[in-house]
Length: 108
Image (tube, rainbow, N blue to C red; front, side):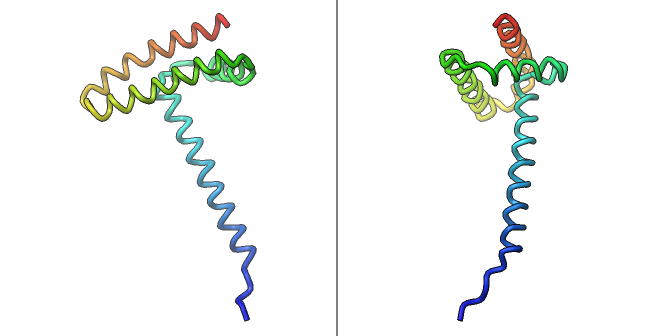
């Protein structure tokens, strides 16, 4: 005869895993905000920009944003792999790019 399954233990394990994944997602979003320079924005500005982004249905804009984001991550991985000592210089260049993006968002 088979041993009965402990559904309560399995549910608890799944809940723990879901909580860990949610915490990791929140941490990664925070790291993304910092790495893009968006941490220089106020919470109200950042929330407003994110709301506009989430409400945008224009596929062309969303595709352009996705391409820009992919380029950001590709450039970032090359910088960290090829020149880790130049990361400080890259950090000062990122906020200006983020300001340009927020300026464009305000105009939209």
